[in-house]
Image 1 (cartoon, helix red, strand yellow):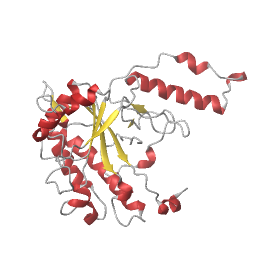
Image 2 (cartoon, one colour):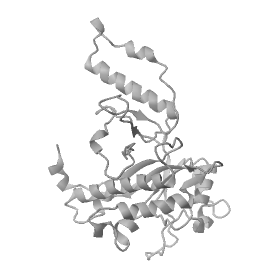
Image 3 (cartoon, rainbow, N blue to C red):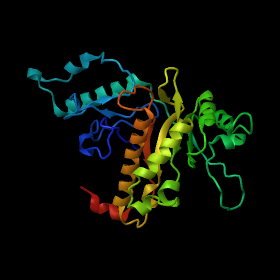
Image 4 (cartoon, rainbow, N blue to C red):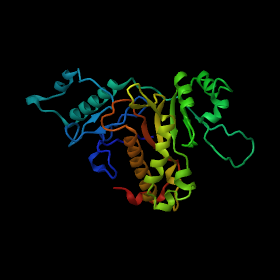
Amino acid sequence: EPLLVRPKGWKSGFAWNEVEHIHAGKLLIPTLSHKRWRVDNDTKSHGKNSTRSHGQHGGGREDSKHHDEGRGKGGQQSQKDKQDEEVHEARHELELVAPLKLIKGICYSPVPTRHAKRLDNDDFFSDETSSMWSRMGRGDLAVMKSMGANTVRLYGNDPHRSHERFLEEAHDLGFHVIAGFSDYPYIQMRDNCATTHFDCFEQIKEQYKMNLENGFLKKKADGSVEYHPALRIMTLMNEPDIKFFPLSKPRNFAKAMLSAFDAVLEAEREAGIDETYRGHLPNLTATISFAVCTACRKLDG
């Protein structure tokens, strides 16, 4: 699941061409310990007009010796050595954040029925469903922990309900939480994204604003806010490539994902997670299905 990149502009409709990868062909595999990169147009590093910082205070590089390695006669450096050095520097920056951690996760959606039926609500990490996941009830999270899991992925998400107790329970057990938006704002609610020409900004901004108010953010002693430490990844959309019809137009779901990403950034900014924030940030992702997109070939190149 590729991680999206957080721009520093914090404005709707930011310029995507300002965002660059570390090095094509040698991208580091993203894991839970990685932070979202921010683009800082005031400094130049790893390419034109962009540098990566972590959202937390990092340190300077200590292994400057590496800069002098791999150079040939006359101080010249081969293209391969230059690329290897860029990857080394990027890897070192990531190590300043936290050691890499392997995801050992379980998808959690304990539908309480043995037969197909319509559910009034499929949010199973709200306070109302604590009898299933809490140690005060059935203890599903503790059972998953005993099986060796360190991550739980969720699907349903009712933003009107509080998720604070679930995040606290998960944090106490050492779990990382992968939350996400349900299908409701995209294809189920009245005036959903499909009815607004796949522009999901307003729908997702309102949904995520409520999520932030109902447990995703914690208030600090000084009155500022920070993300709950258990929330490590937020899935913008589950299987977007098979969610919107017609499936022959991948630009539709691409527009939906990008507008949803934009909406999350704006909801965060209004809640106090702005360019001055230096706390923990959950990564953002979208989970693509295994379906074959026959229409995607025309977008190659």
